[in-house]
Length: 120
View 1 (cartoon, rainbow, N blue to C red):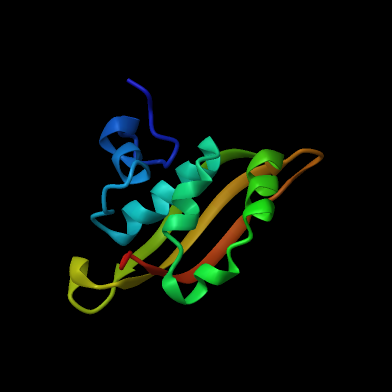
View 2 (cartoon, helix red, strand yellow):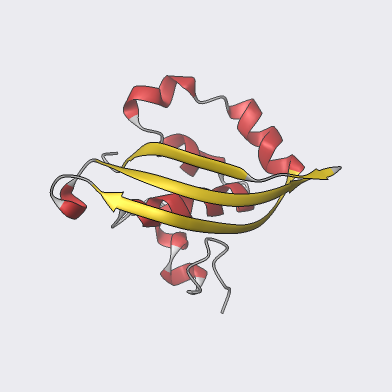
């Protein structure tokens, strides 16, 4: 068993693995966990593929690669994940996540509250 880095306490093959391999995320929270895990594993094709359509053009692959390489991804805490409209049928949700990447040479905490699209 390989514990998933996304913080679910599930096996990678039962959690983020299938989503990173292209299966649709069943929830916004699952998508957030899979994107975090993709950064940890440097599987940035998934991060790029799952960007919301309205911001897809803004994805900077070189910057994402740099960040993934320079950080030691220690944990992910999802404080809130709310499905909008008709629950899992909604194309968007909001999240507040705290990830704790430790940059080489110093610690950092990233807090975000952003719309997350599941409509890919």
